[in-house]
Amino acid sequence: MPLPAPLPLVAIAPTLASTTTFAGLTLEGWIVAGVLLIVVVALVAGRIGADLILLGGLAMLLLTGVLEPAEAVMGFAQPAVVTVAVLYVVAAGLRDTGAMTGLTSMLLGRPRTLGVAQVRLAAPVAVASALINNTPIVAMFLPVLSDWAKRNNLSVSRLFMPLSFAAILGGMCTLLGTSTNLLVHGLILDHADEPGVEPMGMFTIAKVGIPAAIAGLLYMLVAGRWLLKDRDARTFDLSNPRQYTTAMRVSTGSPLIGQTVEQAGLRQLPGLFLARIERENETIHAVAPTQVLRERDALFFVGVLDSVRDLQKIKGLEPVTGDEKAALTAPRHVARLIEAVVSQGSPLLGMSIRQASLRSRYGAVVIAVHRQGERIDGRIGDIRLRAGDTLLLETSTDFTQRYRNSQDFYLVNELPGAAAPRHARAPLAMAILVGMVALITMDPARAMAYALAAALGMVLLRCCTGPDARRSIDWQVLTVVGSAFGFAAAMENTGLAAVLAGAIIDWGAPFGIWGLLAVVYALTAFFTSIITNNAAAILMFPIALEASRDNELPLLPFAVCVAVAASAGFATPMGYQTNLMVMGPGGYRTSDFLRFGGPLTILVGIVTVALAPIAYGGL
Image (cartoon, rainbow, N blue to C red; front, side, top):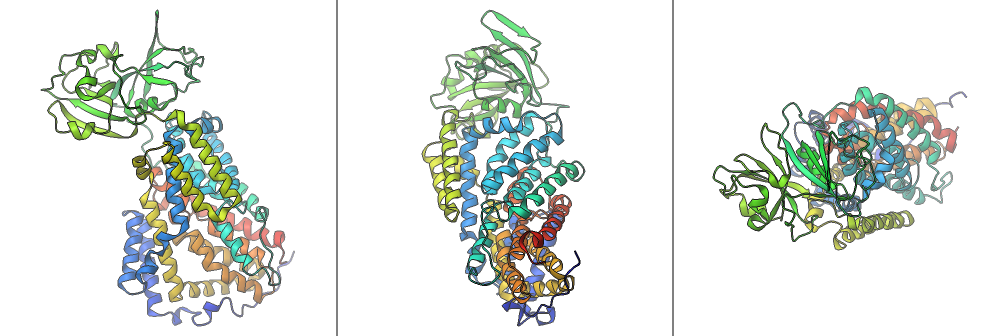
């Protein structure tokens, strides 16, 4: 089909009338342009945290008088920012109860290769994100995916970015998939009485979103092996490992009873070796993967600290403390894991762990023991303590404060998180999640209220503690997201956004509707990369609306391009909040997003621009 004749652009948007060239840009506009350039360069360099860079940029705009204080901080009161914050608490409840582990283990399985792992991850995440808002999907998958990657010796830096991108791609496919789609839908409704304006239904955007998502997923699975780099320390340094000796018992009624060692996931933890199994009248050495576990089996492991900690999270296993009569008065999900090094003058020297009675002395029980350069055999309770032995203790939360200056120990270090998940409250956590999702699906406009209620429910029903809830919030992400709204206000107020939009859209006019849609997509994607998806959509929608009016074209292809491009923020961590959520845990740099996400943004744009006029009219 031949391209339509070139379309004139008379007045793209009301804001373009006063300043349509850079020559007409005010001094404040040039200041904003300079600050943005500094911010972008600093983000690309990656030497300073993104939150500090954005706050520094806001400070410059405040000091130069471009922004008023209320304008600079208005982003921190946005419902989207509050919603992201409380979703971290919801995710903490799911993590601390182990609720997501069983559900995701069925989906993720035990992949043999990285490619299979990415396929198992991307497909269910994309489908779920099309039906549920994609931000909580990423929040829920992050802790589970981290443990899963560790068990399968996979790099989280090769999984966390595909997690974010798959969630974004899935969110493009329905009205509820992302807040950007809902925002554009609301803006369309404001002009519903105008000719050529049709509202968006639940699956209107799917005509373009599904093909774009399929193309994007295929790109990730093919290109990920070359364009994604290892940025995390997923593989333990096993050349000189600090190995602990520990013992776990299969508890009464454990779901592991009748499973093989392989099925129980006890061979997937890196740097961990199951040395033997002790039963009432039998000791099994050289344990085979097919060995079936029985009730009250004592499993003796040698392994690195992280894997020993992961053992504590497995439902149906309980630690063998060395003193069977020792038990903490507080539940395990309230207790903490502490590393303590026995000092040269400690009264514990020469005693066995059973004789030392750490429960009565310190309110602690020994979970594991490390002795430098020496493998410790025998039962935990029979180990005689030496100076320099590192004990992994399960104890109360105030142990560190009480004994960090004690002469009994050289070093006392508290490990983050509870000693064990609250498995008994996992059904409650899942019920809260299902309720939240159902309510948001029925009434997405009140997403913040429902997410806040779910977060409070997690704390009040003791799926997670108040301190754990506070620690779960990623304040760096919230700072970046909140700061971005201030930059959007500065660009709008000074006319810089209008100048950029007018100049770039003029370039597309000679190429007909595809040219117009291409520049609308490109400009929206650009703004998304340096501010936020919702701010970019708000900024670009009036321009798309005027372009459709002045050329007597339907609004829907332009609106869909704005919605998709505002979500397609793959090229920078600021492009979408899920990118910010995975940036720190994945160890990513800004250049990683540009290298892997830049081509994906272009690919999604090609599919969207090509299909939008066919799917929604305008040819």
